[in-house]
Length: 458
Image (cartoon, rainbow, N blue to C red; front, side):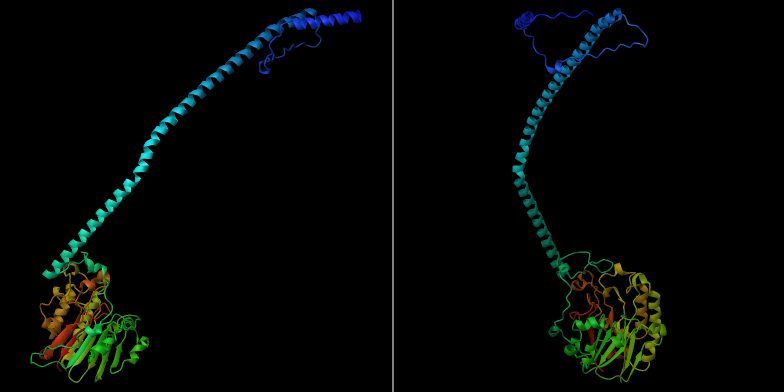
């Protein structure tokens, strides 16, 4: 190639100054933003090895280069338009959503206004509740007054009270809130009588019978006080529930009485006892049957003019599971008593576990098939009396109602006098003219049974 000619310094200076003037005089073009720079993809030409290139080939490449650049610029510009369109659409959506939010906030603000009013009305609701409560109280007081009135009517009419199958009262009144009394005011109890026998004689002998429901519990409730205040000639107790070696120490301090015990072989079950001022001629334990006597249910004391038999008759049990044993006892006991009655008059006392007639319990209809009021047990009592014995209380008071000796602990039955007459004094007909009185001491507490007293002339 020919060597390039170098210009002298003076000419170079002129050309430089001319170029500067040209650039200054030329209108300034606006600068493009960096984002608007177009990136044209490079064109690639694949040339196989060994091929010889001519000047025409280079010219064709240059010719193809310009349309490719135009295409690339068009694509970039279309993308920009799309992006700007999307941005405009997004901005419109954002504006619309902002307007919607503003509208919603206005609606919420409008909706919240009545809530503020409701908050102000809350104290009005409280006043309504107070009024409702006062109305309920007034209704309750009305009910109570009605019940009081009905109670007064019942007392005036002397009508009986209705109870359920288990002697639980079906109606409710003030007595339900009161608990059964367990404390005896001994000074108010009358242990004497002014009644005379058929021959016109006053009694000279007093016997008390009491199912104590457990000797230890009975003593803790001051049951022994009956010996001091009542001073009976004989006290018979049933259901002592303690063996001879488990007798409470308080019994050893009792003075003026001989004491005898017939205990069950089973701990805490059955058992009978005897307190007597006069020492018996003899004492018999049991009824002469080993199977029955293991429970310690009978104690017989012989005196000069009579036999005293203290007995705790077996219960037929719930659902009458021991009814057969009870009926066997009836036959054995009847034969046992007959032997003594042939020698001397007999006085039988204790818990016989039967209400003989409908008058002897509060609700006979509901207890037809319950222990103590089955037909079998009642017939057994009738058969025994027909052998020559007298029910002392019913003999003297044949029409007396609401007189009971047992009350369940359920439903404040004793406070309501919902009970059974299960405890008796049965005497031989030979003593009919000697009988003065038989009194139920229903104001003496300490057990679910109350004591009863026989007054007789011996």
